[in-house]
Length: 449
Image 1: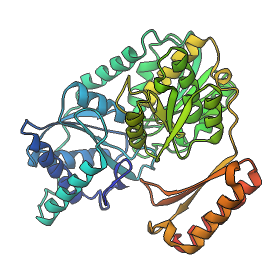
Image 2: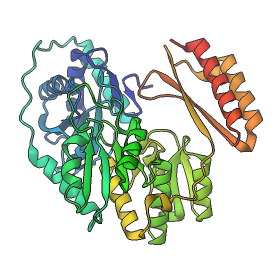
Image 3: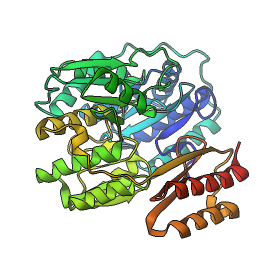
């Protein structure tokens, strides 16, 4: 069982285990050693988001990579999908991103992509963990002060912007006004340049990172912010990204929040109309709304559910041959265009669908009627198996027996935070909230902080 890697890399409070200097250095050494097994020179490209801990973590990690025999090139502040793209294009052995995505500024993380641009399989991450343990057991000493980071290669960023534009050829804002919320994160370095070339009015917000304001009351964690801006400015669309811009949420022309389910619905119908929706199937997760599934069914499209985590969605897509998949949270996968979820690419694709349809985003998803859904996050001190706690098992059973075919119960631990997530979906909002509170209270009573 993996101890360091969660559903999206290693993530913790910066400076605390496993993101303390010694462990970070060991991660670099271990990764370089595992990559060296191919017999080829090991080259790694590394980027980061805008957190104030990013530079020292990147420097420490690069020191470990060099000690392990790898060469490391620095892309500076770029999005997570930019690193995936660069790793594949330039045939690097791996790509590494220093980011904690949607987490607060105090946290940070290490995400690793293979040279093919895909996230590492669980078994490979486990193998790297074993090597990290061996490095740490050797009690390797690291310098108190790491060397300064090398100058970022600005050409990497330009290449990524050109890739995005070429992935959706002929894209245009059609003189629309759009609002872009960059979450004071990695998108701040790319989105303004990207969208301002598309012939329209672009209002950029939250693009002034100071190291501590990433995701703070903005971005994909707070889509109501960009929705309000769209309404106040009379804009046609709003886009909002998370800290590393691997996902995006939207606001339609009326200032309504549009989540990943709705985006997938619009994109699935567009692909189907053009004969490009492979097997007429979409891969979503256990968190996607039953209303989304019903809307797909009305269009003759079936839906498969994968565990939460975009790499698990991608695994199911490969098994089923699906050409579209994603998460309600805004990770959308277009495997014909990119190897990983990309918020900026998703925004361009949605613009393209709107452009070619001649309709607004609100009109494209007007028939989507979601079941009431609530997610309660419970902070926990440990992640004990929930099926081993009688009070939790009882609360879940009561909810499932009452809801039957009129709702769903999904309980899981977050793969990136010390949280238990309780999701209830039901035709009856009163029943939904009653069962969500009962299950959350049971978890809180046994495991709460």
